[in-house]
Length: 331
Image (cartoon, rainbow, N blue to C red; front, side, top):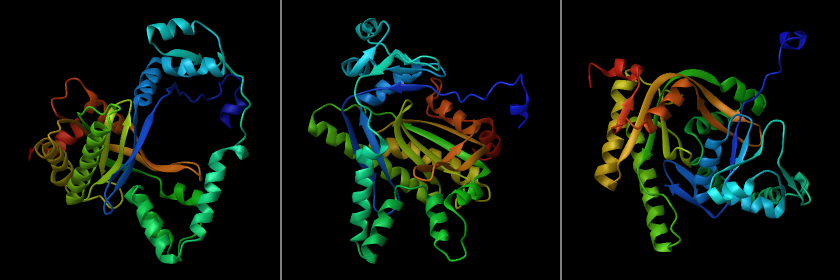
């Protein structure tokens, strides 16, 4: 209200930047049928997006050279894009004030999209399942969901729970002191086009996932995510959320986990890794709309954990000052 009443105040701006890539990708399911599962997406477009996003500034959209070559076939792209393709560098296709790409093709409305059809088919398929099959399906889907959300949903099924999903998400969001651990296994995750080599990679990724959940289960930690993004192949693990908070948690569970996962990856799978770990306040809750949302952990300490993991000075494990102060009498 103060912003709207002030003539000198500027409208708040959401600073985002985007990268585009194109090419062949592969999706694989990793994990087991007991602890956790994840859906990993691999392929050259992931690297393209990382490089394009890195070249962009706030408010800009950059496309990889491969994506630029596709865009010029579908519409008009203004600017010196040919030089960018020749030099194999990302090219800016939009900023806050200007779009350099004009799509010639007819735009598809939301109602015409294949996603709407697929959702309808899924609902019809579920209607045909009996109660035991639905319970099995719910169990399998829950393996892909953060444990905090699974526990909340199980409680929601109880008669005393009231309110809409939106109200619940707001009520369950909170600030907590969280130990965040970013782990990057140092492996070559490039697809080769050779089926035997690719299958060997898929098996290794599944082994990494299962080993990580095994070590987490020993100390009742949580796996936030296993993903391939601009930082490479990354596992994000936490302690301190609902269901994973304990006395002397950092010294007796969280840091020992970081040490054990680093050792187990190398001794059992021959995979070296780099780990960054921090302890601090973070937002913990559901982000997104009602149709598509996920459980997130956001805050400066989380960002620092990622930076420590990726630091060129990281010899294997780097922790922040808070972790060091809480464990210096033991480690």
